Length: 139
Image 1 (cartoon, rainbow, N blue to C red):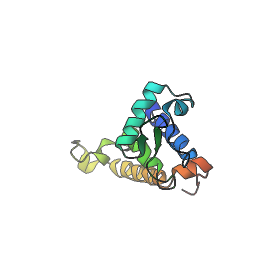
Image 2 (cartoon, rainbow, N blue to C red):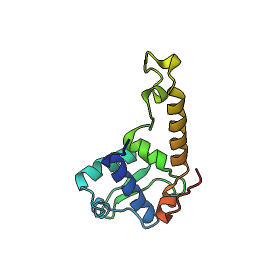
Image 3 (cartoon, rainbow, N blue to C red):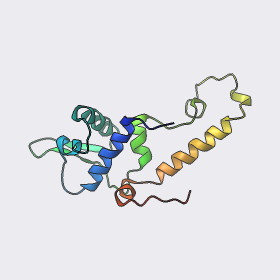
């Protein structure tokens, strides 16, 4: 399992905005200097705005800024805004998913456990942690 460029670039943009929190709105061009294509970045920032993680400011000095404090925005919220819910199998996150093995699947408990663990780890990492490179290794 790999994170797509959508997830990675969305995360990079959010870390950039966290690094510049309190400095006012950041232009699309400034964020794109991370090496991200502007048109693609604009789409990603739109998804982050719809998820209420960033807000836009219009005008000459406008741009994008965090819609919250870096210590309150988790990696999981960002990844889910970009990629959708993370799960190791459809049977964990899609209740209407029909699988002929659902009742006797020997792996379903493992998929649930792994999904819960990874989501829990991402809930424990904030933008502030990423900015400060303070990622805990106590899992």
